[in-house]
Length: 392
Image (cartoon, rainbow, N blue to C red):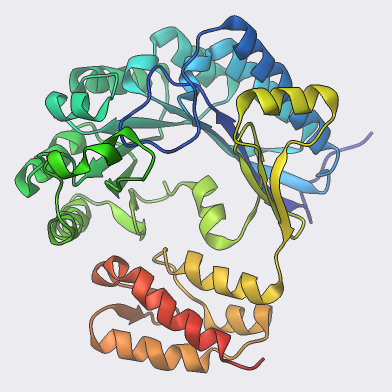
């Protein structure tokens, strides 16, 4: 009799992009469409399942330990469709019995029936997009829910049996003061989430908010920085450990899937505009739902970009992604993996430590402080310049 063993299998994350939204938020530049056409929904579902089956044959030496349904608003697809996709993943890949399986949802898109069904299917983590507790601001952002619906959604999530849920919050919103942001944190903390993501509003060109950004009383850079630093302290006071620039959690509740992006783990993405890093290559699916469906049906081209990443570029990515995390840079790992000396980087990091922007841990790791995270782009540019001029 054959017994499946996970020994010596490479960990793999799976991301499924569900590109459907009830309405587009004013600030959002992620790929999504607003449609209720059964033909389109069914076409997407058939295509993504076929895509998963085809890719599974190429990853039999991998063990899937995280699955993440993002969007869009995955919960809008419905429990039957999400369960079908998860079942296809399980049939096509080796999935760990302890895999973290997450789906994103908006407060208005969850019901008791949907949550109970997904929990019974093996989903064990929910990421809830609350963003703010002020209904006036939520309306300005184009969010399709109220804060009261968010509170009700959390009650439903707990009732369904989930013991791991995350909330997404934003600061620097139109008309939002520092005091209002701190009150938002206090209100959300009463919901006792295991994980909190806090993102400063970035106004992206091409979004509706970009067109009237000068007229909606947005926070300036200094105010956003103040909001961020106060949030870091407030969350720490309530027992939430910061483990990445924007992410905080209770003990043992890091987002295992997102950590793959920040630590160079392998992942495969399915659905339009989904990205992958697998087998030494990085590739991205076309940013068009119908083109994706047609390409899967015909066996045609569905990638908009594909490239092998040179080792030197991987070294730069190591700096970029690891400096986002509190675990930070490991000198020995850096030198052994990329065959580059860490000493020139460490000299600069000592300079940042004197400024209160970086810290060295007892085991020799280097990471940025909260103030350092605010200047991470400048710090990274300096380190990359040093790396580029360093001989292996």
